[in-house]
Length: 506
Ligand code: HEM
Image (cartoon, rainbow, N blue to C red; front, side, top):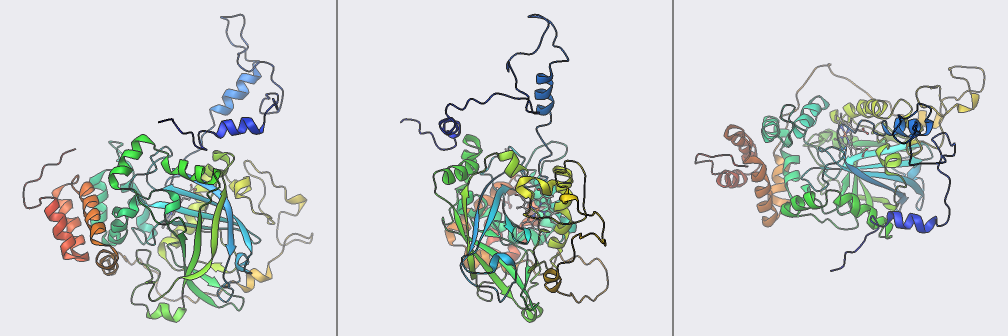
């Protein structure tokens, strides 16, 4: 069978066709034309290279700095550009500008990712997938930085770094996954049970980034023009349909084509097969939140659709590939703290912790002026920040202190009106929320949502990882799964031969 070249393979061919005959002169990074590209300036054929070979110095000294630190999580990813379009009026919930009228379009950038692997990791491994959207709105940048799952493993930011450590490489062996680290932690923190079941279900190995739903996961809030606040959750339902890889195919493809999802996204957009998702929200009032049988701000729990139905909002469409991956996707800086008037946060402890982490990491990863990089740049910025490494924004000579008498920017009255006052009371203390009904919702998932064949594959996938840890940890993990459903526990025990002596084989 003839080898078929896809859009990814043809990227250079297409470039050449588009630019036929152009033949620009090569220049240094300072734009100075170069006469001979492929030869160092040496004294004779075998002589040493001269320090005055500024062309070589320019090239090598740029090359040695071509990489920045990778994202500490979600390092491997792919992205694209497109738009968000409003299809339904939700102005009774929010005064945020992107929702102002039906038909309004807001440009977006999106980045999908795996969580635990490094920048060159295989796309198809069992993992949660990142689902992050940057909206370029009239009120500046708004980011929804979510996942392809409605819940997360842990629910307090104080536990997050430990959770990530157990997903990453063992610091001694430099091997991942380290099954002891993972199951030890997950079994000691039973709030992980819900997300563990989802990750080990078929959804842990999506067929492509296009074939999965997206979720804001956290509870956020919307503020309408009267200043009334509602709690909300974001849902993005794929129009490509949910499709997953079998565990075996996912593993095979990880070896044969580690960039499988990256390639799929690029090819789909290049061939005008534009992926799209329908955007919905769930809405909860303040009173409903007070009466809710589960904590509506607990990231390990969903809001049941029967109680809080999905309300249609609009659609997101991806129709443009990046022109340079590094500039536009590697350097994209998604941040849950990029909020616009009409959109606020909630008391969710994880979200509260995230309010700190993203700006902090971007300043380290991309420098203090990462917001001035073209992909991150809002339409307008007027403030009193100046200078710093890599700045390009002089703000037109406006004063750099406030208050001032020289026409510097002033408070925004609309943003003020849309800032809800937050009544707070209680004692400041550390309350471990880890044991707050960890099994009711996983039980609904296992017993009601999953079909028997899906349950069977879930058990097989769990066993594939569980069999590699110690018996003590296996038994502890299974005691959690037993609390989800007795038969889940017994199926795992049977598959792991836990009544017999067990030898770990690799
Ligand atoms: C990326 C921290 C929880 C979704 C990141 C990055 C950090 C981070 C430092 C790298 C960002 C960058 O370098 O650009 C945290 C902390 C968390 C947390 C401290 C909890 C306290 C979550 C949760 C979700 C999530 C719960 C999903 C619901 C993402 C996504 C990315 C990311 C999608 C990749 C963004 C991109 O594509 O550029 N996180 N994270 N994170 N995080 Fe989190």
